[in-house]
Image 1 (cartoon, rainbow, N blue to C red):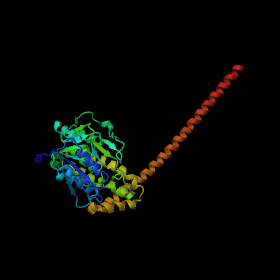
Image 2: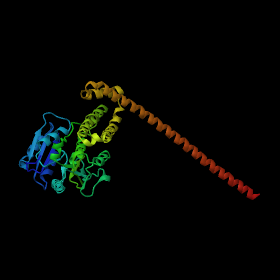
Image 3: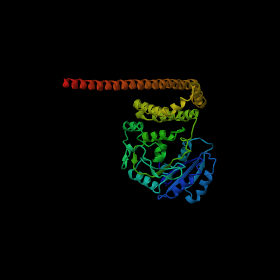
Length: 378
């Protein structure tokens, strides 16, 4: 699909109740050394003054900024990002969170790299980070063992890419990337309606389809540590289970749907299973501690009430199965704790015996020395 708009870059900002930060985000776009881009702000039914602030910036962008609204609050950034993609006209698309910032040369650097290397995806391996109040500017240094020090293409062989996905050697955040818009639409690489981790599945889609996946060392994005973000808000055990079951149940299905369309995964089901298993284990590891704070009935009730509608005729079976798995994990945890206690006790006993043996050995050495002394005196 040829880009007929003449716009090199579309920047998509999903917006929700960010009145404290959205002005700074837009200011960072106004300050760009690269000017030929459009901005699409998609509001997820904010209840504060965020939209009024965005409206006040329209004139400053001289027609390059549009604000659109979701019909109802979706509770995540996935659907607003998809709507932004549908409205975008750029050759490439980029994403900016409503509380974050770009460096002044961000779009110029990314677009120059994309054109120079004819890249489908340009991924930045590093970024900057600031505190909520804008102080503490520093490098983020995520996944520092996997940094590149120069523009580097990933192998286009999925035999090599899949293990890298499993080892988390790809940055999953959508804002680390500039992506060719045609790639997204040709292969329908949209964000699944999960909360959170929609960007994980989306990035997998990019890694599955992008022939020219370029990783670069450029640091052009400034991430803000926001205490009110969806992943940082304090949650009850029930809320935590629902929060993480969403990407487990719905996200795994979306990931599997991506793979079901690709010949490689049909011919190599072991890679398909390895990705699904990896995602399951990672999410389950976060969810499990919260489930231990509820009894099995509460776990069952939480899952059935929230997700039963997705299970159809199997709503009881799957909910009961999840509760059973929780019970078995609880038993295993108790057994493991008991085994650790027994091992600690055994180690303590062994240490005592070793200390006692050492004392006995020292005492024997003293007695032998005393005998030799007495013998030498006679």
